[in-house]
Image (cartoon, helix red, strand yellow):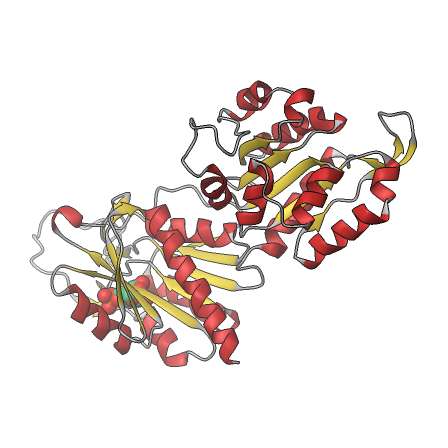
Length: 402
Ligand code: C5P
């Protein structure tokens, strides 16, 4: 479940700093993306080069270095799914608990909106000091999570609580925090993706150019934010996003049969699949011969899965897609209303902006007050993140009303 998760690993200056290299290795082995930020004192215990070599990414240390992004604490704060502090010193805890931003690491923790997980390590008296414990209480009250330090012989010779927790414990805590503290944790999201294939004979079918990329990007992003994701996918050439339950289907009717029973228990549905509107009325036995020549394929209407969900909608937030060649806004508004959707995303389906099968898309978002938001042409993962930001806002607005 850690695959593709982004972890910003903050290292502060304690003897256990060398153990942060082990954690980095373990996270990379789990296919996490790891960026390391170090305090100046951490660099006295272990060099940035070690982490740069392990992660393949630059290690940031300074708030004002001139070589990194102009406002590194903000760009770094926006990047991860989780901030993990290993080892966390009494000083970093104290600075964060009092809202300080006097170095890069403290500033980005203050600026970040993602979960923060602390793995403290320090001398046992420093750990037990009521001031440290008071700081921890403040951070817990602010939603931060902690891996308790272990008990044993400490580097300074004292024996007691204060040893950095084991690698395995820290990794378990990372998994738990990602599941329970993401902005969409506790929500069930059902996503349809890809084309459907409607068989005509044993080897031929009707389908379309959908690559499934938009739906898969949405599933990955929703999973990253802690949602329980069901991805119902037509045939595509994409790897399943990690931590997502995937059900593979071929036809529109199969998709309907999987989606409808899940619908009542779902909080958000995102219908990104390009479902075939029609299917051959009959599936011919075996492979049709070249002769006699066929002049037509009799077709039947497929169920409109999203329309049906719109009819049955109760608490759910429903999101649809439309691919249009002309008059994108009026066509999108009409479709949103017809299917009883909370949000519709309109794709360009022709010309240079054609989104079908592409890695990038330029889309319009139209909400239930017909407000239109135009996004620039960008990678579908970026588009997915913006769509989910808007859905998070919608969820908060709904909760505020209740
Ligand atoms: O009506 P149109 O096909 O343009 O609507 C597109 C939206 O409806 C998409 O969100 C698509 O996933 C969904 N849809 C569906 N079942 C169909 C056709 C479209 O769920 N049979």
